[in-house]
Length: 340
Image (cartoon, rainbow, N blue to C red; front, side):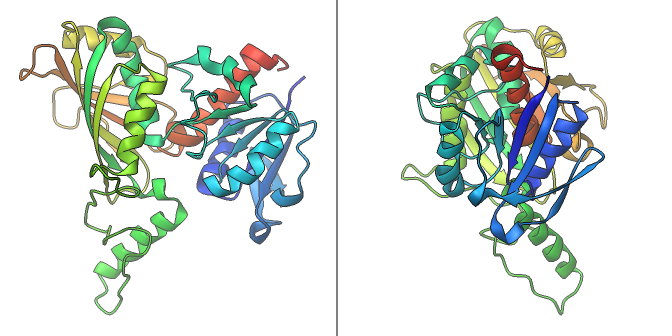
């Protein structure tokens, strides 16, 4: 016996990826519904070898459905997620709306699977920010061994994190660079993204950090350990898919780079590719389409007593969003609902 699953926002980048991953991982589905707004009503989307026609989110009845994977913005989630939850359908939400609610679990299954039982508070589970998700997968096994005091992270985030409009803008601006008669001014981003980097993701806050940077701080504390100090600089780069992060970690006790490498090799969801030779590391182009979070460039930081540096790369549409949501659904099914 399988589950009755709803994918909300099925025509977007993340919604389509959710459908792909549910099929790829052979999630036990008895019935699946693809929902979209009325402007996308009737659009066809793929689920394995099946074609689904989107239904109207506004009129959909969630009664009798087991789980709903939400891949729409916070405004739509605020309207429809409580309706699904009240109907008895467990919501797994990819927006930022519920991440900081103390009554709603924020889950990365490799890090805090025990938090899954907190879904009962509101029948809702939150999925973390894409940049946080891949980083905490690497931090948690190291924290279990040597206890992390402080993390300094600089991100290099792809345009797909800003949705289809972000990808389109990079594509059009890149073409325009080679065609001087064409001008594509910034719209989705604050400055030209083609052949450029932009040190701003989301809005600025009073302390000078951006909201994306704030998210990484707060979410790491909620998922891994509230005592960890985190400081982040988040940068948008002209890459279509795949977020990269340079992570500096300070521990309470010494952790040798070789032991760290061994720990990460054994950790769930991680692939270590770390050869000290030209090309002996993973770049975002190589991680696109993969489930794993890739770790490279593991080395001691000689400027502090107990420090390590590492390079972390992952497909943000997968581990950063859709894959993590499906993994939460798998965990929920395995540990709580137990139908599949």
